[in-house]
Image (cartoon, rainbow, N blue to C red; front, side, top):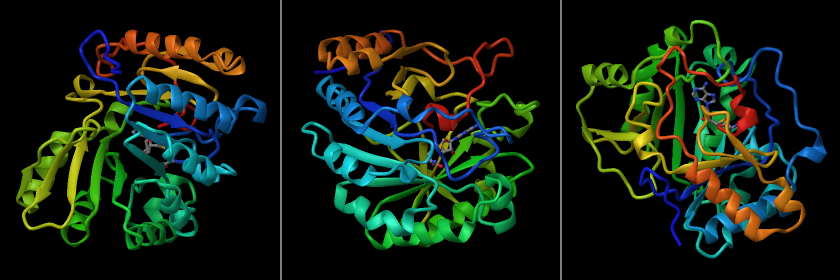
Length: 325
Ligand code: SAM
């Protein structure tokens, strides 16, 4: 079975958030005062998450990314992942983490069947890292990355580029790919929490490429089948690769192949549209047909593109931790 939206995009990628809790407070993701957290009874149980995953896979989803909040802070995550990995038809089970708990958990994640890790890392300088994460410890994340790589995990590092905060480190991040088999992806800062002057923080992907090009020769790479919206490159002779995700300046929505489900069971087809469908009623009754129809309607309503670059764009501010980044 295949899921295709009205604009011909094949939807085969589900981002499933398992919690809105996080052990970091990144400035681009959350306001300083934090976010109102879901009550425990509001968060989907593992059984409910599994039913959503199973239904989505039955409808043509081939890749599931587990996210949050921070997925590695939810109790019982490893056995849940092992059950997901066993779903027939699921080709890729991947997970996004801030890396804090990775050193301790990487081995059990691998044994559970997680195939790849995306790790958020926005600075290689301890003070800047602590500033961006509001107190995070860079060393613990670097140890987590090392451990994951030693265990054979393919690792992608996600860098949210913010002008005046970490954009001086673009070359340092690009240089990480020279002798390590990592993928570094530079993500344009998005106005999730509607910070004042958000545009001033955005460093366009093209600028990132220009700056890296001043130091390194690189070549564009072919897009892989289940890849996300990154445009990928390799520096001549490098072990790893790098990419840009131009969420704001373009080349993004046309290739979008994803839907999301929040930890509270709301399915969304676009981060920047307030339209969402509550899946909980179908879960409570084990109504698989209803769930299938609800997921199909989410795909049918997927907007052609977001209009973030347009000043009049209306959407509610949100913390990525609440929506599942
Ligand atoms: N806790 C995990 C982590 O840190 O990777 C998973 C959740 S986090 C919300 C997922 C991703 O959302 C991160 O890679 C982060 O870079 C991205 N993100 C959050 N807010 C963003 C923003 N305003 N602009 C761009 N990316 C953002």
